[in-house]
Image 1 (cartoon, rainbow, N blue to C red):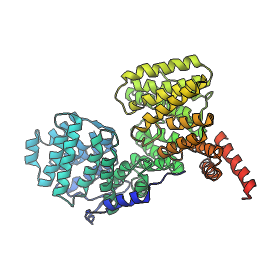
Image 2 (spheres, rainbow, N blue to C red; image 1 turned 90 degrees about the vertical axis):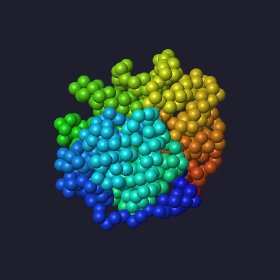
Image 3 (cartoon, rainbow, N blue to C red; image 1 turned 180 degrees about the vertical axis):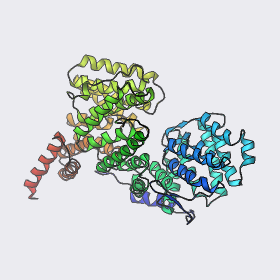
Image 4 (cartoon, one colour; image 1 turned 90 degrees about the horizontal axis):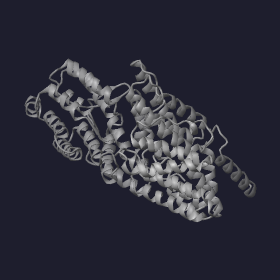
Length: 544
């Protein structure tokens, strides 16, 4: 049941990507652990090492370290125009929909107080255009409008200097930033075609690999970014984000061993950087969220729980700076519900380990409430389950505009479906699950572990299967797998539905894949037992 891009679509995108890109300059600057680039500029020779390091780090979204490198280049050469440009670029995070205008303008002001003076001071027309572009980016007005104007400026820059590899890379990134943290597929495909062509020109360039991955990190397009994903980690071993970023493609293709290995590497780099600042390692955060989910898809529930409970301890550690502790609280609330949705360990330690999120953003409170509500229901405490459901329903109406906010109706819908199913109202439960699934399908595809915790289409399939609607269940699980390839519970549901529908060959294929994915499982999951039983029984009947 691995989902693949149709060959025709893949071929057309590759054809788009391989046109109109000049050959790479032979004058490459390579830095061990970060990759290579060609970026001519007028800065002093003594400042080049720090500048190039900053640009390479910038391409890997190591923003703080990149800013440090650019400031070192400025110290060596106070008139280094592109070093100030580089620092300003660390204050915009297009794919995270973040921008710190004040910090960027302060950096530009150190070069020259006004945009007119900066334009007059810039030593070349090309560098003047780079500075002009960021003056537009950090101008006055709505962020979306400024992002659009900036992208237009970068498009003009690439047209004026068609051999400027870096301009094309940053133009590609600017296109993906136009949708303000969401995925606009046609724009992402355009950006991805440009980044892929750059990667084919210089497969050691972190931006080319990184932006290719971001553009194609959904199940439909992920196959196009496989070469970039396989190259990016080894290319930039000193960039934690580079190690993690490869898993945007691995997860989109259900490659759980690779998801786990890459995020372990990302954590190692992160912890090394934290240790250099005399800070303790982290068990929370983005990389650990993906790592825990990868463990769960391998059936390594013990490792997943260890990671989760280490995050729990961190979220309650009052010795941590407030900002880091609050980030840990958010991460734990998400990880806990994600863990419970997969492991279904209603009597386990995570099930009874809530944290105080009363001072956290509303969306964090809602994330924790979903896991607590499902746990209460499964433990026979319907009264509390209904209280959590009511909290999600009522509080979710005024939730802040956060990355997870669009999923509040999914959390509400899936918990409602479970409550209705437990009450014996099969028809209403199915309607609630289908409504949540249809709404979830209208959202951009997650480029990571399910923000829904329990994918609603998977739940719909489970309810259909329990009611004996095997063909409809089979279709629901197929749709779930299209969105989350090789997800264990969706694959198990598909296999069970195929077997119930008499599609023995399809069931056997799915069960064999399920057994393979769970080879290293540390628990005897019901799904693994079902796979082994079916495979053994079929082998006896068919003699092989």
